[in-house]
Image (cartoon, rainbow, N blue to C red; front, side, top):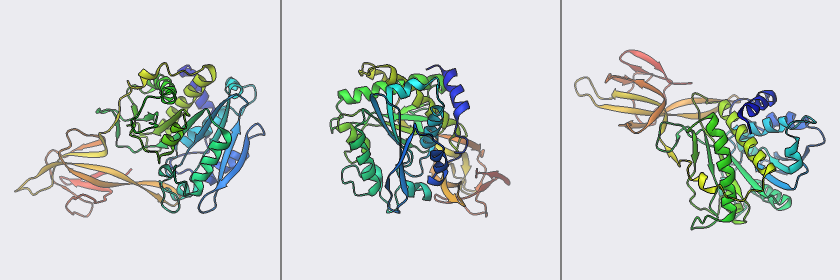
Amino acid sequence: MDIKEITSLYQTNKAQELKGRYITNSHIKPLLDSLDSSFEVSEIGTSVLEKPIWGIKFGTGKKRLLLWSQMHGNESTTTKALFDFINTLKHPDHVLDYLKEACTFYIIPILNPDGAAAYTRLNAVDVDLNRDAQTLSQPESKVLRAAYNNFKPDYCFNLHGQRTIFSAGNTNKTATVSFLSPAQDDNRSITASRKIGMDIIAEMNTTLQALIPNHVGRYDDSFNINCVGDSFQSFNVPTILFEAGHYANDYDRELTRFYIYAAYLSAFNYIAKNEITGNKYNDYFKIPENDKCFYDIIIRDVNIGTDENPEIFDIGILYVEKLIKNKIEFFPKIESISILNKFHGHKEVKANSMRALGAYGQKLSIGLENDFVTIGGTEFLLKL
């Protein structure tokens, strides 16, 4: 699709009610209630804490797409972009009506509502749902498997978010969007199913390179049958993993939200208009594998010793995300004190070999949380 068209559609149809990182059932319920009868909304199960899990089915086409988001409760960017996409198709006689004519969509916007409410990766009994694909020990896992079995998708979209540490290869470019066509056996065989997923990812990458050149990554494809994507791929259904990552100073992931939306439209348009054969699968391998080359903040050339016995190192800081009064706040925490020449900071501070102290004059150490540090008598704010 044309980039200008995608941008215009997003600006017109963005679900303005959804903002920031904290997205829960209470946020999406009014949006579900506003959908007309062409969208079949139903409660398809409940969570450990008996919160509803909703499914949205729409479209009349033969190509069947199953999408689920917030399997990890604190990974909400793809959920926001799903509602932007749904908004785009709400209007009759829309320019994208052909998507509903060619495809039938089944969307589970929040699979893990307990984790979403608590802003945790895990569910209410501390189980990672993405490691529960075989045992199906959790009610949320059973809901997803039932949806898969009943809907019988031709394509699966497994939608996630990733931390700020990831880079697109060993570079200073963040992995703003990452993809994976999961393995379906221990040998990581390039099967027909995987090729189709790779083909679709290559198409999305083409679109994203026009928007965020060199900011797309590819995940390692080590096989784990306990992961949902690997399991569904093993059923010979092309499955695509999305990871919404970091861009610029976008800690609320509002810029990334647009790039995920663009990837959705690119994939759905490609599927609707083509019989995907996997012929473009080789282009998938041109996407660099994700690396971990970033800290949120790096303070360069810090003297953590004394004036008489200087010890010059770099300090790597990562934000800890905490839910405070229904809002996500970011607290800086020291993760590394070492030479970080091979790493990049989303923000960098030059200490010029001066001493640095914590907010209360204490020596800086790994694990310490500080809103600011003092370098040579000057305070530097670290907290967002």
